[in-house]
Image (cartoon, rainbow, N blue to C red; front, side, top):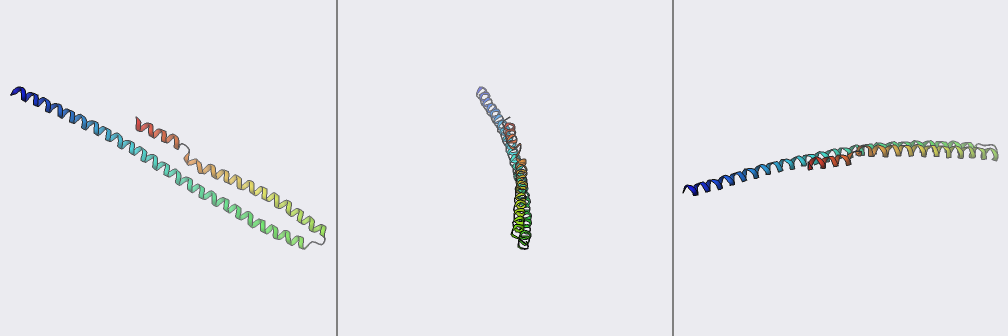
Length: 149
């Protein structure tokens, strides 16, 4: 009976050891999984913050471009009205033609200058929109590497 008891105790001890080892491995795996989950959640939060910053910059950029277009349009209409008055008030056809020519030249120059200004605003805004996303790919790779380790 003592042999049977010893074999039973040995089997019980082996089962208990296996159970303890299994529980330890399960606990370690679960902790690692939770750590990975936390890393991915942190990455997601940082990416959401980047999207928010980008959207804010895009809104401000669109507002600045819209304001610039509005100001140019208003000034353009005022200049056209002044040129029309000058042409209508001219004393000869030659003088009217000169007023019209001067207006066309200044209107074209103003248009080119305004388009350059709007182009610069759009370029700067686009650059600023993508700025928050710089490093997001590297952050993703770092996150994945840290979870794998």
